[in-house]
Image: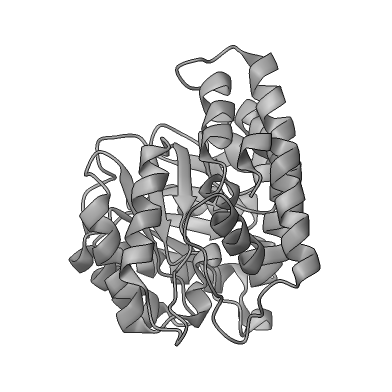
Amino acid sequence: MTERAPARPLGGVLSPVVTTFREDETLDRDAFLTNVRQHLADGVHGIVVCGSSGEAALLDEEERGDLVAWAREAVPKERWLVAGCGGESTRNVVRRSREAARRGADAVLVVAPHYYLGAMTRDALLGHFRRVADESPLPVILYNIPKYAHLTLEPALVAELGKHENIIGLKDSSGDLELLGKYVDLAQSDSFTVLTGSGTTFHPALQRGARGGILAVSLFVAPIATKVYECAVGSGRGDAATARRAQDQLTPLAAQIVNGLGVAGIKSALDQVGLRGGKVRAPLLPLSPADEARVAELLRRADPRLAA
């Protein structure tokens, strides 16, 4: 097991990048790196690969490793590179964590196992995450996403896991500010950081104590997301009015494109702002023409300069 987290703090806006595919569904390295470099140029504080918006559930093991290695080529050491390594068996999560370390990641993001949902008791989850943390060569970030995992990491469980020297934080994608507040109150410390995964509630989450967010909406409107952060808790902290205005721009994009249309919506938005979204991997389907037009209109409303 490694020492605690790298010296730099975990926080800010991290972008959970999409996985770019060619027409035959093989990985498109050039498109992937084009996106990563632009996200960094837009000012995000780190990159997350193999997350929900990266179609992690549809990737094979070699692809996961390649994406981490490619991202490391572009992500400077002073910014975070986090690899999604969740899986259904504890053994597999440990193996993925070791491979992510070998390929250059700084930390791993781990969602709870959930296929055998009824068996995922408090003791089972505690044992799973503790073993992952014991055996992972990288610091571990817990991932609460009830929409996909169909379970919620209870605040008391998170507080207990937060005592482990190799568990450094939590991404909460529930969008439930009351729940996030409990995580902050019970678990957040100098060595454990709570991040939000909800672009619709980014500013209030920061006000409630989150130290940043892993936000899919930042993939196509990074300057707006980083403005919320900087005006709320960053270098421009105290400018609540500007933070609220930026959040007003962010909310419909996160609610309707990210939450409403999913990965296909995110990729459409990327295409429409001049980045590389491209196709989704089967069995996911592309957007209908009507939804493509809806994405364009949402972008235009947020900022006319984003209109295709």
